[in-house]
Amino acid sequence: MAVGSFLRRFGGGGVPLSLEARIVAAGRPAGISSRELLAAKLATGALGGLLGTVLAAGAPGRLGLLLLVALPLAGFLAPDWWLRRRAAERARAARRELPALLDLLRVTVEAGLAPGAAFAAVGERANGVLAAEWRAVGREAAFGVPLRESLGELERRLPLPEVRALVAALDRAARHGAPLADTLVAQARDGRLHRRREIEEEAARAGPKIQLVVALLLVPSVLLLVAAALASALVDGGGLPLG
Image (cartoon, rainbow, N blue to C red; front, side, top):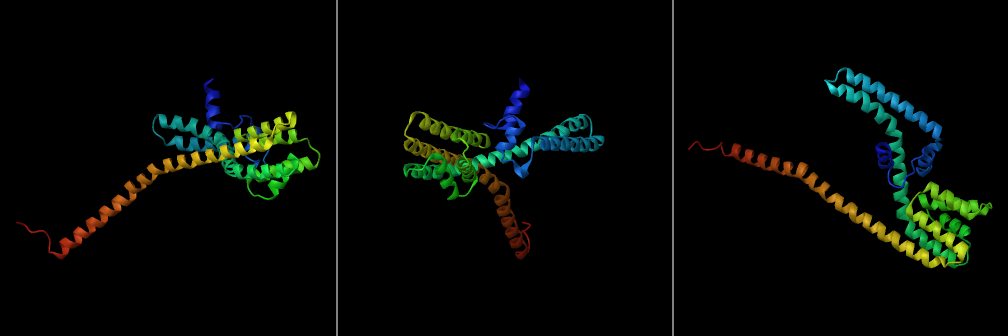
């Protein structure tokens, strides 16, 4: 139970735990497969073990035992951390692009294009992670792949709540004839609100960092300048009077 909880936290919210799913969510960097990634995990774990053995030989007390355990584990988990960062970067990029692309998708749907063709049209007129994924959906639709299947693959490549909501809206529209344009407008608005909250949170986190930089760099620099000025004045004045 504790191991599963740790893995969920390490994997990041919303990122699937299976190795193949995590590779897909990270955009399959360098075309890597799950077997190749597992080999990389074993190799980095072995390197961590070798480094831990070398460092533990000269480490005092329990620190050596800690190095022997921690470094191989860190090496084994390093590729997972790399995948997590890649997936998080893709998710942030997709969220930034989503509101504008939803607006374009709404316009193309209202103009009479089928959803598959609309995805292709919007993807061709934009750049970025989400636009590339929408181009892939459009290409598959042009080759006759059912839209529901293409959107399912899109969810695998971008496992985000926003993408799931879009896929669900398209599925409702296909099944029940629900109006799609209003849903796209609402989702675009929600995406902008989410992005605004993210910017505000980033600004709030940046405040303490700026204060720390000021405290560690600027204040000592000012004190050094004041000290230098006082020393120069003392030298020019012949030193302090003795009384």
